[in-house]
Image 1 (cartoon, helix red, strand yellow):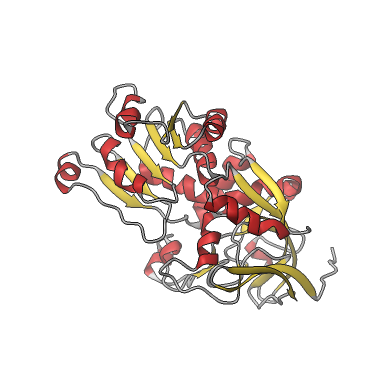
Image 2: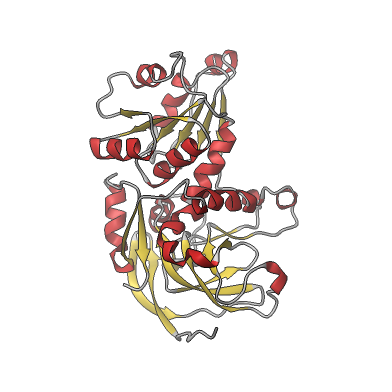
Length: 356
């Protein structure tokens, strides 16, 4: 199937820290091992706001097209993309955070490619998916079945938010029938984490602020919602939400603020696991050493996931077990989405329609 590829396109371009505008730019040409993807939808992640602000200790490309949850259709491919790679023109694919890795370091060889020191990051160190056409490494795109087209807007958030929380739940080592507390449960990552946790047989304690987020969390499968804005003793409330009163087996920290990272070891049960996923700028994790040792508490970082994790995360979506509560807006409205993020008013996940 032939595609009429234009020479120019619309894109949201960061030209300086905190400065972004909708521009007309050239459509890129794929390299020998790359695909050209017509981006139809792109999820908006809190990482994209960090990229705009340039407030992480990670060098950012400038100028930059952000975005790393791009879902679309392959319209061209490089001459070294073999048919055996399982992707061809006309296929539906996703552009994730990991744009490419070296494939030969010790981390890549052990399916830990997210730790590769030569990794290139979509929408951060290379241009991402806040544009109508994007290049992507053929070895790292996520693949969707042919019949996914009508649901690409809902599929887009799985590429980062879904993958990240699914991997984090695996890292928590919580087993079916056990409890997991999800901090920031009403946001984009949290709304998916709640559904993955429920599908994995876990009891979900959702923690966030405000009644709207509470309603969303309960609707998506949380058994208990704790509003930190109203709680007088969050540690006691979280412990009380478990059947034996000693706290959840796992904690996923998704919140874009530092305080939850200081609280979690106080309510996770002994021999439980705290998984740090959110990355508030400049935040630190602290815990009492004695209590952490004698209670055998584990504190881990979890960073996106590998390509097999992606396959598994998408499988949950394809079976109807998870679906991000998305709000689709035009790509031209990205600035307003970032404003809502700054004010902590996002419920679910915003997805951009690149055609408007």
